[in-house]
Length: 211
Image 1 (tube, rainbow, N blue to C red):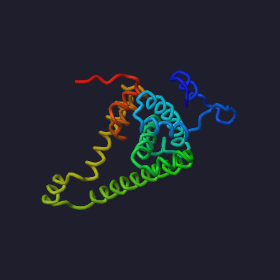
Image 2 (cartoon, helix red, strand yellow; image 1 turned 90 degrees about the vertical axis):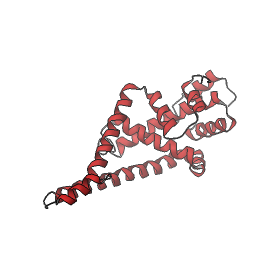
Image 3 (cartoon, rainbow, N blue to C red; image 1 turned 30 degrees about the vertical axis):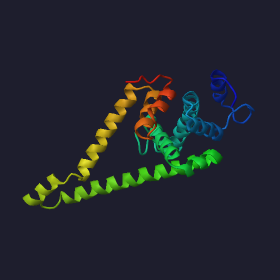
Image 4 (cartoon, one colour; image 1 turned 90 degrees about the horizontal axis):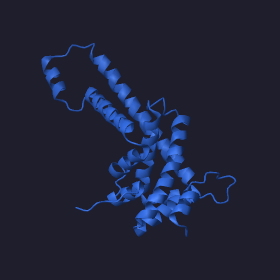
């Protein structure tokens, strides 16, 4: 795209994919992002990443509502949306085959990976419920002092796993409260999708200071 940054940003912001001949398809936006990343063009990486991420977040928001991930499996719409989007980003950046698929048919790629994300959540939910049911059954049985000590020494009990999950959710919710949407997305890209610092800085339009 031989456009200056301002013109390119305006072009990428167009949303009428049905009637606007200047609309840039998701597949092309992602393809241009990959090319910019391969060239190390930090400015264009930021432009394409920002545009693509906005579209990805909107797709993710619609999916978590349609698939009843929110409020069925995750009780916060913003968190559910960002978790799905982060999962998709991670797959796009870590798997060349997934990236190639997305360049050709992003809608199809997204739908398949989003359904897989939903299934994973359902499986975790079932396992947690099974663990809770098992705990309730155990309460009806006598527990010896030795069994009790062994339970205390078990670092992977269902209760502890549930507590860790709750702690994660509290921390994640706090991040969502104190960070802007762009800052939260950058955080997940840096620590979940393993972006380079320079790429994150470009997405935020800031300069990385050297030592």
